[in-house]
Image 1 (cartoon, rainbow, N blue to C red):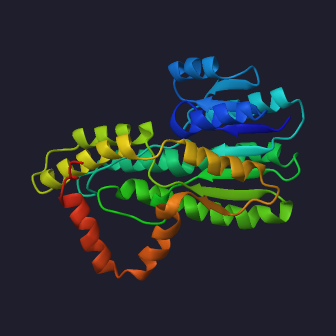
Image 2: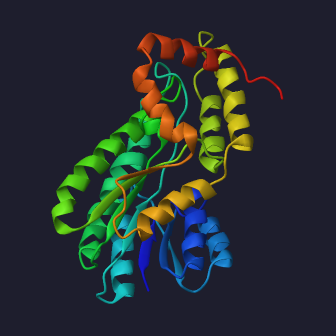
Length: 280
């Protein structure tokens, strides 16, 4: 039975991936942040899924998680690691608390590196193993008021590229998946960060428009299933691609962005963040 570790498995893409791989016959070690998430996941999965408390920013919890998985595998190798844990902060960089920026990188970048470091010894025991980073189209194209989030996802792209080059000689695949906009809890949580920002009249109207767009994205974007399909391909392909993206926007936007002059793209982005979405 193939085995996989999934971080951020308590909700959204992580939970959906855990449930899907369980149904596909995998042994899943799911890392979740909150106790109530563990209870919900337990009810939705079989005995082949074990749920573990994990905060990727805690070195002790990350190390303990790796030890628990190692013990459970009994010396066998781990086939795949899915680095999915993530969060998002929204707001103008001028007024964004620096602690939010630090937290953004601690979870989305440093936490992913910390987890991967701990699990590499287990991955080395399994032929054709792979590390799958869950990135975003936001790691290829950036827009205003999400600078912290984009910066962390851009950084994850670099981490994936560098680690792929370092691990290829050992036969360990490193893949990054780049989903487009998804209707997952990360954006409803991110929208709440706007409410906690210091008041600033310079940005008020644009942030109100952004809040409406984020709320609409939560209702109208694709569900996590599209990202799950990308992850499934990344963990099952005998020779996985280095990147997987879904949908026209995620595949075409980075290429189109390179062809659009910066000032033109800035005006397009400014219009989006200045005007609230039209009612349909």
